[in-house]
Amino acid sequence: MDKKGELPVVTQVEQIRHQFISIIAQNMGLYNISETNGRLYGTVLFAGQPMTLDEMSDALSMSKMSMSTGIRSLMDASMVERVWEKGVRKDLYQTEQDWYKSFTSVFITRWREATDNNHQAALQALKDLRLLLSSANDEDVQMIHVDIEKLEGAVEYYEWLDEVILIFESGKIFEWVPRRPS
Image (tube, rainbow, N blue to C red):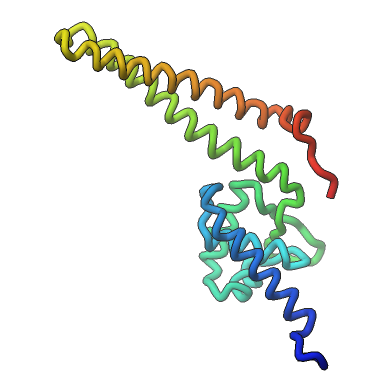
């Protein structure tokens, strides 16, 4: 405590960082990243210099194996990158400095997979329902037509969503919503 009874600035900064990291970690599920890996990301973000797995393990009081698995997950999401420093034999990692790149990479990967899976499921369901029409009795034909209409709407939606993903993949999104200078 200083003269006024306040915590030292370093302690206050650590508390602010901890609070920010906690919020980021809680929201990483949106990117299909665990809360633990979100904490790892925040730790590497505020480290001030690239970190080894041992340093991460010490900072988070977790096993080196957990850190290795977490870093791999964050690298797959383009949120962390391996870097090289002269004279350092261990792998070093730092956060990707371009948050826009990280977001678009994660967005494209996650949304593309989900959209493709849903689109294919809707197309298959349409195919199956259309085959079923030929053998359905009069009572069931109306129900099948209603379902076909719903699934045709879903297919249109997934095709539209694919166009949105292409806007991110091509980088055109930044023509409409420019990156902000940092």
